[in-house]
Amino acid sequence: SISVWKELDMTKTVAIRPDGKITFPLVGDVQAAGRTARQLSEDLTRLLGRYIKEPVVTVVVEEINNFKVFVLGEVATQGVLILRRRTRLLEAVALAGGLSKFADKSDVVLMRFEGGKETRTRIDYRKVVSGERPELNVYLKPGDTVIVN
Image 1 (cartoon, rainbow, N blue to C red):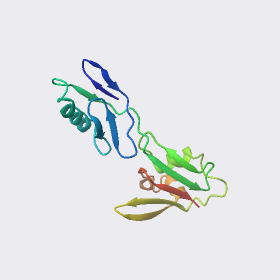
Image 2: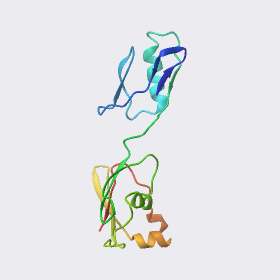
Image 3: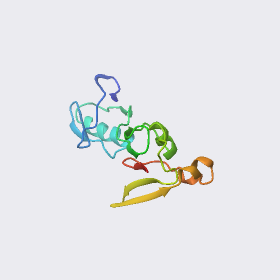
Image 4: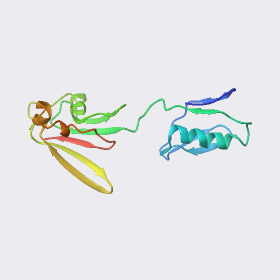
C-alpha cells in the first residue's frame, strides 16, 4: 500500500506486475521488484516531487506472494506451497500433510537452483526429527523443491 500524506487521492494498494513494475498516479510505471519499501518510497517521493510540493510517501508491504516452494513425492498433498514467512523443511512437509506411509524417511531431497546451478541435498528425515541432525532442517528459499522418495 502506498500513501502520500495530505493527498487522499494518492492512497492506493497496488500489485507488482510480472514485469516487476507498479503503476501509480501521476508518475506511471515504476520499478518495484528488487527494491525495498524504503527505496520505493524514495523513488516515488522523487518522482512525485515534480507534481506535489514536498510529498511524504509511505510504502508498506501488505502481502508477499512470490515465496513458493514445491513439495513432491510421498506426502499427503503434493504441489505448490505459498509461504508467508520463512519456513523450515519440516514445516513444509507438515504443510503438505506429512509423509505418506510409503515414504522413505531416510531419503528426502532438497533441490535448489542458485548461482546458475541446481544443487540436490539428500536429507535423512528421521535424523532431523530425532534431533540428531537439526542443522538439516534448513530454511527454504523461493523456488525450492522438496522431493520425498
